[in-house]
Image (cartoon, rainbow, N blue to C red; front, side, top):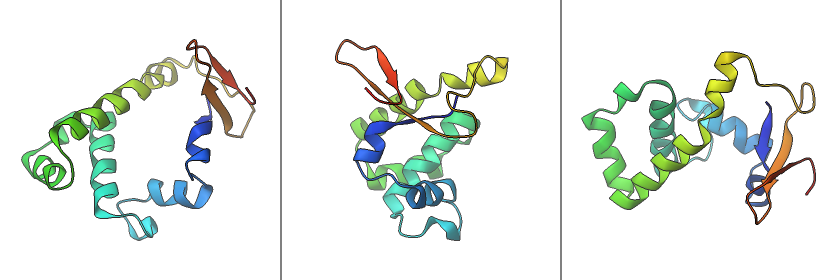
Length: 116
């Protein structure tokens, strides 16, 4: 499913920033701060190699974030990571073939795709 949380756009996400995030560990990262880069390293490790959560990454995280902030990032990543099961099982599908589609949530927890 190719969805992008609509509030991310409202908070300033554009394709340039999305590209910087994709390349956060390279020169493509542009203006990302060290704080942003270490948060992305944590997200990558949680999603792809939880064993990569070593003492060096932990120390770097603690230089930039409190314990509560690290926990919040971890829980957010885990919450949004459920779609990996759908992708692995081949049960995901494009909402708009070949394009990202915005989505968000109503107050009652239901979600919308496209426009609210």
